[in-house]
Length: 386
Ligand SMILES: Cc1ncc(COP(=O)(O)O)c(C=O)c1O
Image (cartoon, rainbow, N blue to C red; front, side):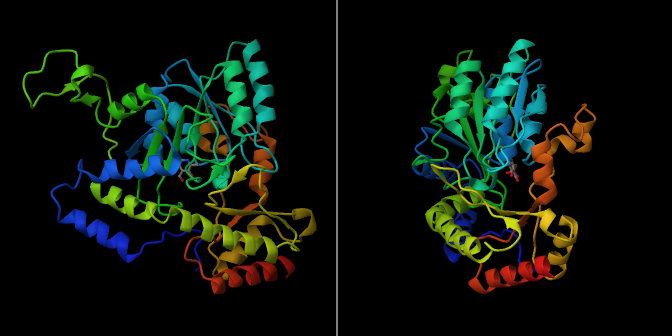
């Protein structure tokens, strides 16, 4: 089976992890700060906090922005459930903004319409989480402009987008957001096995996220409320979690970050080849928003079902049977049973639902051979034309 995504691990990665195993620190040593430095260098953000998943990063980002009971968080329905769940973890209410039918990202026009209505009834969101689906940045200038007008904070869910750019600035620079979050799950562009990070240019937000990722405990004298008892002394000044990344994970991350540009350009070469070889099939190919350079975590095609005699399910199952490890990103979050129990229903976000009925992610990963790609193209062509 040719997978839809796969990590790329070389001998340098293996050596880096093994070296940590025989070092003094398996956690809370020098590798996490080194990984954070690599993230700062790659994005130009002032602060980077590595954690054990993007889910944890989203949670501490929401907490640092003061999201709590009585507040509202909006995100895209076409995302992994974590982008919405983080609001619920904080006791806030969650709602969605429908997607743009060409980029599949949260639509700034729908966002503005929803803000106008929400303002009338006093239900404006405190936090909006645009998700850079497949690695392509959302229209951040427009979303940022609306945030100034309507007073919400922005967390970019860039779980798919490390190595991407928005108007020549790296995704993660936080130019149009308060915080950006990355995921380092193995199918993503860079991996630490499990892992995530939150980046910001705001010293106070960074300090809060640092506390939340490690029990709300500090050893920094300025943050303490009482006089130190001695050099062993620490204080818990807030309620936090154990969301720390290990040294093994961070060492893998440091090593992987050295190949970030190579990973993303290899994905672009493969995507350009797909664009050329698939252009005559009854499918819609990924759209490139002006000013964006995608991290290209995923290559999603949309079936033009009116030109096909098969359903999306038929095409998907046939591809899987023939050894092509396709996937679907994502089932609209508002249609999940857990969210339906909150009152969401089919029909609430029509563009997201239409996208879902047509989308298939086909294999794209660093290390995919041209032969593998040709096999995907040939099989897809055969299934769609057969
Ligand atoms: C858009 C998006 N947000 C958040 C997450 C959560 O990432 P993690 O698995 O690192 O917690 C994912 C993971 O698939 C994702 O795709």
